[in-house]
Amino acid sequence: MKSSDKYNNSFSPHRRDFLKKTGLATLAMAFPLPSFSMNFEGVSMGIVVHSYGARWNSKVPSEKYPGFESALQLIKHCHQIGAGGVQVGVNNWTSDFAKKVRDQRENLGMYLEGSIGLPKSKEDLDKFEKEVLAAKEAGATILRTVCLSGRRYENFKTDTEFLDFKAKSIISLQWAEPIARKHKIKLAVENHKDWRAAELVEIIKGMDSEWIGVTLDFGNNYSLLEKSEDVINLLAPYSFSTHIKDMGVKSYSKGFLLSEVPLGEGIVDLKKGIELCRKYNPKITFNLEMITRDPLEIPCLEEEYWATFDSISGPELAGILKMVREKSFSGELPYTRNLEPEQRLGFEESNVLTSLRYSRSKLGLGK
Image 1: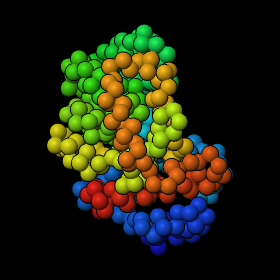
Image 2: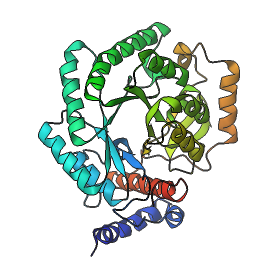
Image 3: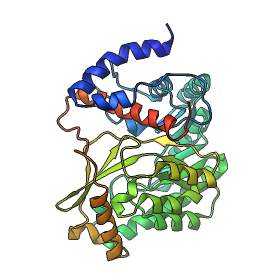
């Protein structure tokens, strides 16, 4: 029996039961399990570790969806489902572990991108450089990073707080840049619900380094009242890597709800975005970030939301709210709060498989 057949046989019955119970049977028929192959035609979509937020280090005693204890399990699984690579954190990797990742990645013919935290002080530089070296040893040439782990409209209550964060972020990048340059590895800053697109462009241009660019997230900036097409237009020229996602929106009393949905079901023009990224960087990678979670609340009709957004005009807000009304998600946005742990793991896997299927059949990313 081929390994792909073994995987299909072990997964399919549970998937059918889960989809039937959760009302996703129609979805499963439209997007059946992919046929797996080690030979990729062109560049297959990779997977960001956050697509497996429930399964990463999961403690759920599941036979069908065992937790990923390290990058090795993630890489193996992503290869089995037909992904071309992974983007995963390199925190505290030893040289020996990096070599194991490199050997597995090379044997499976997959690419690797790392995810790394920026140094917050000079005392962090040694640790940062060790993680850069481990990522390079494993075969990564790009490291995704973020300046803010939270969300701008939740973290900062005044413009002064935000400007202090901005200044410290630039200093962190200035500390990181010589290390990235020394080891010839690209550092790609994500638009992570912190920077509006023009702000991130300003920071990247100010760094003036071929080693500092962008991880272009296709959906995050709706939370900052920017449409994906405008964000992609501004950031694509500076992008080393991507987080590909589709977004569903719905109005609620304080603004609108924003949710990752399987590729092809939301409001993002994925094909146009991918074409534009390739125009500026033919070697750019496309990484699926299908986060399975409850919708995020974007309270843009509340005064507190606006503490750091004095540059957003009334017409911009009106345009976003109009878009939300006109492109409101059909049916209910996905929720996970009422799912049992095993159901949530199954829902997560279904969303990833559906998105990979769409990437192959509609976006030309792999077979």
